[in-house]
Image (tube, rainbow, N blue to C red; front, top):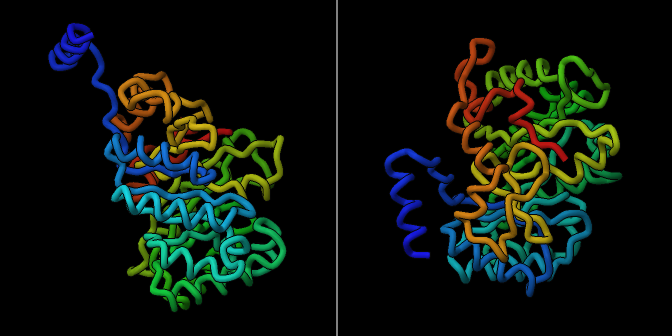
Length: 311
């Protein structure tokens, strides 16, 4: 085994084999029960991950969220929470998250028009989102808005940005549901429309508003748009996704696990086809003339479906 590792390292240094992707610095982790989450966090800490986002899902267990934040803190991992406002404003959960040391809380803010927001996030969620933003401000717990781009939310984008600015929200993470230009859908933005939207948002967002981008999701006609929006983005571009079953997913591409977080070390996962392909895409990320200098394009062209996530 020692000789095998020596030869592997030697071949990597002289360029005879591909150098594997280095361990991620962040992970988006699907919420599971505390006894199942602890070994996941232990493995992530061993990889050197220093930031995690606990993805709450619908109707999360409040105690699981609080315990998850505490477990992360014990390991020196900064942890935030991503979830629907309707689920995170139940009882005193936001206060409990603040006490447990949450780094931030990200909630979908789909539109300033309640009917548009609620059609995708659920009845009454727009009201819950505004309530959450107010509570988070009083708790000094940094809020982040997940701005989802669909044909209906795009129509109200100016009003939505104005509302977020009025709420003094400075952290906005944009995510889009998209389709190819040659297969237009009334439920998703086309690739061309997405790049135009990215240009507009980065040009018109308030200057002190920090805009970050999740990899787009390719629209799945087998599921409703609301279902896809409520599931949310897979992971940030500098992160990996850890599913409830331990599967480790790249932020882009098909939802195929490159390995199991509980059973495989990072070097093995990094050499999987999934992560080798992601590494190559990161290495050749380019900017093109239609949208030069966009933060949204730093990880690859928005028009290239290879840079989208697919379920």
